[in-house]
Length: 84
Image (cartoon, rainbow, N blue to C red):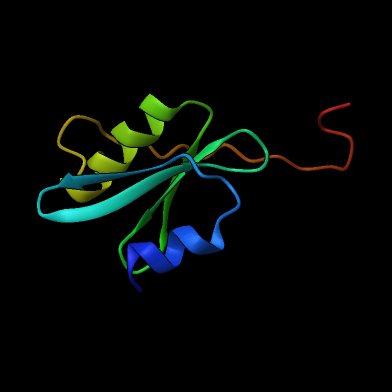
């Protein structure tokens, strides 16, 4: 899918193109006020509350998480009223 096709389908005009490690991606504002990124095939990469974070994590996705690390915990939530 071409970026021009992708931007035509979006309702938000604020779309920017970026390149990282030879991979192209776009960042755009969603209808909920968040920022999302997609690769040139249209696959979602990440969503964030602010644009800079979305760009950072999209770049991390393509460069193999060189500037960050992931920790897996065994945290689990059970029950229905966890957040009330």
